[in-house]
Length: 344
Ligand code: ADP
Ligand code: MN
Ligand code: MN
Ligand code: MN
Image 1: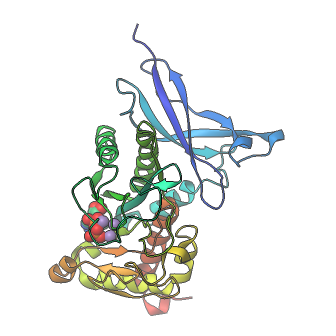
Image 2: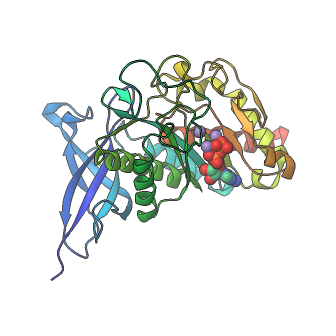
Image 3: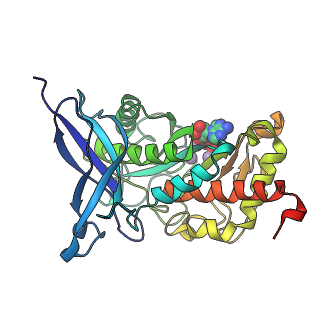
């Protein structure tokens, strides 16, 4: 008889203002799929002690690159015991919106930035004072400027082994800050994969005695914050620059709603400095890294492609960000497509 395998159930908790990842292990008989499971919601800010049971329903399963063999990672959504979505479950509303606008074939590529810490200090930073000012660190090489590459390499290998659509990695402007990209794939797929890739980041770094944070402004002052630039396209945008511009205009009309939902402490990061547009303003432009939304130069040249929403924080919830973008952009397209007489 084949040995059972281990399924690591990963879920998103109810911590405010930014949810945390949790996980625990289930031993599953060989040949069986990971079943519906449960946990103590009173320990994760998801239930009161006297009625503590929450349900875990698997939504995305992949090979476990940490344990190898037949072991699996199981991303689960949280349900109440009547099998309705838990209030902290932001995936369920995305699933509805994604279905509603399915015919637009929206793709997302998310650039997840993060910062390594060792104890209370960014990895590799001196015990007293600060490293040399920013300027040389982005995409650099050499032990004087690069901190944590061994962790980044191990994480990238883990993402590939898990079968995630990881597109690349790079060292960032602030030392000890890094980025990986997931996509381009659909809204549910990219969000599930970003959450799994985040879990793998924490888990891989654990073995190096390093932690990773998604906090959007980990060091105050003249140091870049950490974002999650969200690149996206509809089928129409992939064939038309006008459609790309219309999408930027649609985002403009809903700027406040998006800013409110793009991650805690967004005003600490979107200051108008450090390659950001101020959180209170909306602006889009070609090649403009000081804009809220950037139209990449190749897109302007080819007159088709995708746009980059530069506003989301590193600590954003991809289920919320992709839902808002799909809803805002596709609703605007559909409203325009309706003949004027059809308006209520
Ligand atoms: P940047 O120059 O902003 O650092 P990156 O190379 O880090 O850009 O990220 C660009 C992202 O855009 C990639 O994750 C890629 O998958 C994504 N992307 C490329 N084409 C499309 C497209 N048509 N729709 C959505 N995302 C796309
Ligand atoms: Mn990037
Ligand atoms: Mn970046
Ligand atoms: Mn970017």
